[in-house]
Image: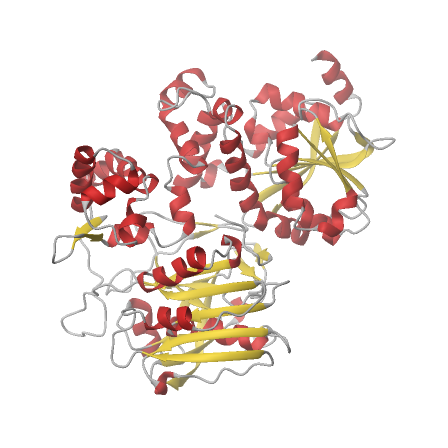
Length: 633
């Protein structure tokens, strides 16, 4: 996923309870719900202190939780200190809603609900009354308004109106904004006050159902295109946005970081209760054990869907390729083999046929094109697939306790990266994209006061340093790594040209002591999510040599994901096994990490969680121990 042009801020994941304190009709299709309650402020629960709800971005959202069944049974995530654990059986029923506004002094959260459809959330929004309570989660991150652009383009249907209205309301005087909003008719239009220089175009469906037709796309395509750098934000019905996304990314050739297209909803048949047609029927058949086993153990579909994506079959069909012969030509595949594959893709709901027998996209095919990150994730030639394919060597890793070769490539991940500059860059970009959230969280929740010189290593170094050096303008940094990594870090740092003179490179293995250091050593050495890539003995050597490069009162700052045996969910356990197969390591517990640190002659002197549960550990020398450890090794 490309990094957004918008600065990101992350907040702890907190489940709160709120109560409806006001409702108001905004139009014939929109109702405003104001929620309040003490848990929107700072509060404590089960001995843990939680911060007040914050919202700093125009398209921030909260997750609302709804009952699993007509009896009102509720499933909620398990709350931890800064994160929540999502249960898989049963899964909570949630819907995302844009934060229209937050009044922190009054502890009020305002949401606007589109009310003309039947759905779990829309029906609640239409029927709720003062005094009703609802659990919610978020916002867990905010994207600030884009900076350094000449104009902004906002496009959406009714569901996007709360975000568009908030953007306009918060926009600065003189900011140039172009807006296109599709609604049913003139009665559904809302006032959009703004201090900006905004041009608003309302598109009326004229009786057509929401999420159908191409009126919004046509309005965007045919409007004059303004000159200058633009940031584009688009939201609405997922399928209806495909043409707009294609226009922006392909016809206008806008870079991915300048285009934010989000499917807020998807047209689908909603089964309703016989006794109340405005309420969805929540009854569902429970899965039998064998059904669950078959679903989890089946291997064909994940590979086949990725093959379809890698060959760009959904993309070609969306562009008008209608026959197997034409599809074989554009994908450069064997016609007979592809015909078999197309039959399978039709059977599983990726492709379908129109009334004339031509190929069209079915629901899964549409979903595969819903966002760029989905295509990247499903690409066999991409880094996400290569990382996940490491699990095919799981049996070998379980037998040896070390990294294993993928059954598909015959090599470990490290060997594949070493032999492919393309994969190396993709791997770096994947980590650095995630670090776009880590950097702001680190400077928000961790203090580097007193640090004037710092060494740093890790694929995310450039992105995280951008946040740290912007916050601490008297600090300088030295980035350690092999030359290919340093080149990519330098490219990331180009986003912050003002800090360039305060960063120097040091080309070396991070397993060695820093060759370049200030007199007396660095005040701090920051290791960004690298310790999980090493086995215990190798990590002990890395930590000992890193500590030898810091000053007498300096510290190692280790940023890493640690495991808690008491609250490991399925996703965390999967990641632990992936790390075993990739690196022969895994996700350590706090006790396991402290044991490795002790072997390096170090002690953990402080720790705290930042962002969504990332651990930040301060390590310092146990007197005289580090030099002895390095000498012994």
